[in-house]
Image (cartoon, rainbow, N blue to C red; front, side):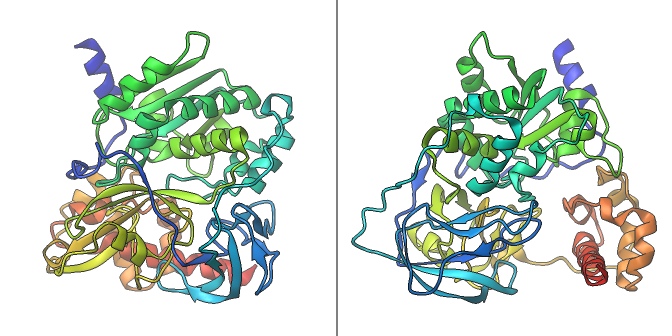
Length: 447
């Protein structure tokens, strides 16, 4: 009882409790998606500068070969997911509907598609600087949703000492279960990745945070932790958005990360469990990041699945592999239902941030009738960042975007808790997202 009481006392404030909806896929073993005919690789699949293509149309490429090199420090490499030929480099539809530069590759149907890459050096012999460079050229990004190039977190400012390394296994978005399957199916890889980061970052302790709705993952990881590994598993209360980095730090360490600071400034590094496992795979086999684990689920899908999908695979092909969608399906969301983005076309490709493909029927996407704000305060009570979403929505509707900065709009992580809790059906987070995009565009233009 004391342990349970401590668990609830230690959690973060506010948040919501949406239905988990993970039953369709949480127990399904991961399958590999077969190779298809064509792949489209948007060059810009992460935060920061886009990589620069180093291949030309007509060129033959091997699976795992570099096709775009980092364009800046906050940038990462891009590799071919298949052996085949570069057929075009030009604007293609990007998830979200916009057009951006992409590399189109036709797979060689007669190739074995075996990975032929050189293994990286033994990580034990690396300096932190060399490790950062290798991770940058591996193409690995944060797989929890933000898609920040993974190496950026490991490039520490002078004088920063890492005390705690946290592997984030909360996976609090409804429907999504790919992180869950990583923890159950690949515990050795996850623990090996933690060992690599723990050693090279000089951390004092390593923690894996997992929500209590994944008891098999908690049990499996605890069973695989060796007595000489300074790693412990911390069960967490099931609450959204538990997977947000600042919320998890609050829940595990009872430490609040102030606005404007990063967790590393407080001696904390956090990575998603899939990111950590990808780093372990890279240093074990030399395999760059060319496959994404995706949960395919939702009321509109015939056969839900957890799939390993080559980057650049059209959404249409993934859905076809899962038996297609039902006749009354009206929307496919890339990501989770709270923070994901509806796809504008089924020809859009799977990218590094594509944690899920969710098919929703007309019944499940019916938009509530919007009424005027009644100032009930439920959005304020739901916001884990203690913002005033109703005020931000009012300013956004009036297009007073600059005024929104005074109310800390840029601190909003767009978790969607406000929209979920609004009894008036106001699309609060969508309006805030539009305002933030406008402010980022104005800043970029000014710079």
